[in-house]
Image 1: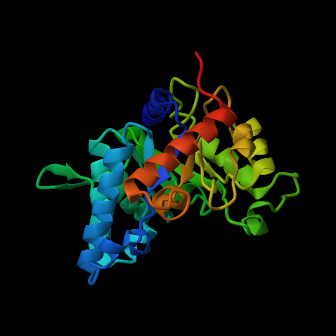
Image 2: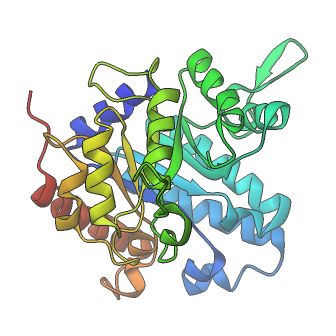
Length: 303
């Protein structure tokens, strides 16, 4: 199970964090930015930036999350950098999460899944264009928008994180709405996520079908954790969005249960918290700070 591999990496590194490589030209150091005059340049230097961070962080972190929007805006060249970043991280033993939030129904959902999880067959060979260990999906279209991804997870040792309670400030406009039963929309989504993943529960008791649960909504996270103990959380919103390590205790049990994302806090640490350091050294310092902060709050796994 891919979830066991992710948890194994978290235990090995004693680090429940995932670094978001949401990289854009504005985050690059000035000498790199000065060379970005075309889309081709942007793709080249974004990948170089990411590659250097992966080299420096691969023994510190268990996973990277690569947000596709930051690459799509640079067109085909940006998507090459997206592909190459995922590939290079995987080659270095890092668990990869493609943050693509795909959703559609039937064969269209299946086509999305082939791009990231299961691949297409060409010339008798299976090729996955943007191969990832996990992807994010939007389940709010219902089960027929998610089951093609789930089936590919079963057949290819892959995983997904479905949006349940997102970190953005206005998520409650819809996700906190209550049904006549008294349950909220996000609770109903949590029920579906558990159902989708019931055949993909690994040795640590968590499923390869996980949930996106924002660090900025402590009360809701606590409800979800208690109701769905086998659901592993991908937790955005830490740091720059205001989420604090202390608030994340509710997401964890015995040091396990989730992985916490930080993007800008790591990528731009050399411009802020560690001004004066190189972007690589700044990112390493920030990643180590985050690890200590999280471990201090949620602890480490003990057999």
